Amino acid sequence: MEFSKSLSDNLERLKKVLQADKNFDIVYRTFTIADKKAALFFVDGFTKDEVLLKMMQSWWSIKAEDMPCDAHGFSKKYLPYGEIGLLKDEDQMLVQLLTGISCLFIDGYDSCMTIDCRTYPSRGVDEPEKDKVMRGSRDGFVETLIFNTALIRRRIRDPKLTMEILTAGESSHTDIAICYMEGRQDEKLLQRIKQQIQDLKVDALTMNQESLAECIYPHKWYNPFPKFKFSERPDTAAACILEGNIVILVDNSPAAMILPSSVFDIIEEADDYYFPPITGTYLRLSRMATAFLCLLLTPTWLLLMMNPDMIPAPLDFIRLSDPSYVPLIYQLLLLEFAIDGLRLAAINTPNMLTTPLSVIAGIVLGEYSVKSGWFNSETMLYMAFVTISNYSQSSFELGYALKFMRVMLLILTAIFNGWGYGIGIVICVVAIVFNRTIAGKSYIYPLIPLKWSELKKRFLRGRLPATVKGRQEG
Image (cartoon, rainbow, N blue to C red):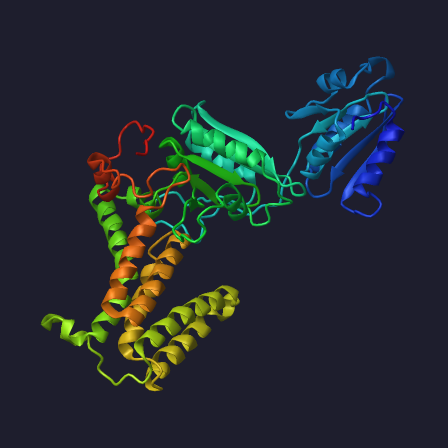
């Protein structure tokens, strides 16, 4: 629906649609500009008041003979601000108004003049809690989209850096920024992602990136290995863009979604590159080894306890030192679920109580659970190692994928003994090998298909090149 030249008609319609009498934060002011009635709409809390005040003071000095005949002329002459627009469609105007843009109407003009003097409540760009580094940048993404794009622009000062804006959600109209380097990205993947976002038929992206990820890649939910890499670090996002990846930023979310991502991309961390090559290689290899131990340690120990004759003589010390009153499989599964319960409790515990409750939980669940006969000390030791090793992965999704695979291995081993252990290993390998990135390519490239030069780069951190070129997937 287009606007009328009559200000009173426009006001009556907008006050009804916006429920201005009920919504205290929808503010409109009527005043006079050179003998013409005018009205200004804005959302309280989203607008720089001092900017509007200065502009209104300048409008009151306009004389009737100096008034342009249309909105285009007025905006050119009397709107001395950087981001100005003209809208004739009411639906577009409502969306922009509710995102924080101020809208000016003048009697006799059939267009709405938009003034982008928005300001959003936001926190500082502090280092993210999850993606901390021992050396390197200490800034992180926040919930305001424009701040996040600015953090990337600060690192890539190249006109080929492209940031396209899209919206999704019939009620939320959530802003989505697609960031990539022109000429380095997978063009087919880019066009497919853009088309999928434009075709989304959802009411709102309530869970930000997760809602978007499930909408654009709804298949194979049963495979727990993540298809996307998430990062709250702008340096990581900038590096991925330079390598030819596509980064998706969603308003109200402090995380960047990076695609396509293989398992090697998800395992990588910023610390691998903030240290010299030998140190970065050690950190990367230790993280990979820890991931394998996290997956296989407890199932392998359970298999050996079920078959004591298979224990090599040098490893004879891993046998249980005390009688087991509860079957080992139940002990391990109980601890798997108990650890997640403690993790959820830690999240919901007030900061002032975290330390004392952690001490109490460590004493009660550690020492007394062993003395009571519920758990053996060896079971507690191995599960403690598995729990700590899970945190060596920066990706929560990858950590939980390893956990699900480990629980499956434990159950199959307990039921079918050695055959179950072997079947579980095969299922884990199949889940990784036959997985695909969102671009439809190998999840473990460059291992399959094998490309030795690229495979070395994934395991060994070499010297950083002077010029970073787009990395192509096989």
